[in-house]
Amino acid sequence: MDIAITGRHTKVADDLRERIIERMEKVEALAPRATRVDVHVVHERNPKRADDKERVEITVRGRGVVRAEASAMDRHAAFDAASARLLEQLRRLHERKAHRHQGTPSLHSVAADPALAPTGDGSAPHAASSVEPWDGAPEGATREVPIDGTPILIRSKTHTAVPMTVAEAIDQMELVGHDFYLFLDSDSGMPGAVYRRRGWTYGVIHLAEAQPLESAERESA
Image 1 (cartoon, rainbow, N blue to C red):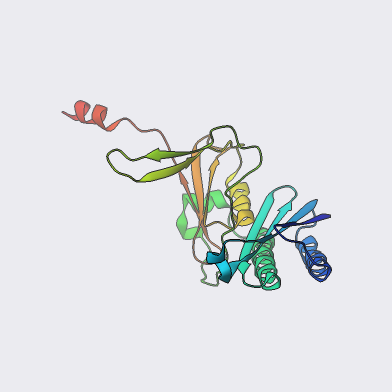
Image 2 (tube, one colour):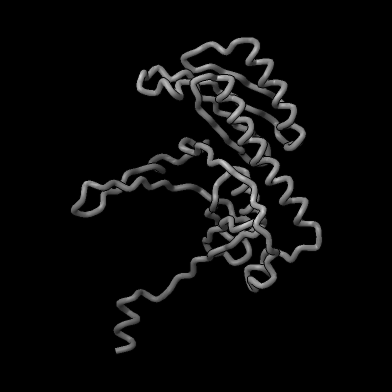
């Protein structure tokens, strides 16, 4: 696994580089298929951000992409927090895959009959990671949409999506550390979203095209 360490507005000292390389051995153990890790150490020059002037961003690339970041006054503390978040995301994914093969019902069965869902409230903590930029974003994918008559702007993003199963969508959700994940269901062909519930349970919502409300009212009249 290749490890690339870069500093932005700063130089990364040798002791921190050694600490990063040592910690990435744990990442490789949890993500053996990872091919590259990018670690960015960022020094914020804005004096208003003195309390979190050091930021560390970690991106693991392989079959998927896992990201985590943290900020602190000290860059060593920022790295410790970011790496802990990253390892927690990888552990959750690793454990979920292990549970998948221990006689638990399939995700499609649970979606059809919620009574089959396993119970438990031992959910592990998780941390959201930064997903502002992404590789291969089409031109115009991010735009701001105004709400009529108000100064409010909504940021709109367009992502390209490869059809995947519900299980694959949950894997991707765990990789990025989010509570939900939008996807195109390869089985039904419908857009949908998977989301995290209590413990090791998940939910899935699909969207099916319905008759426009005005047409439905005319037919019922």
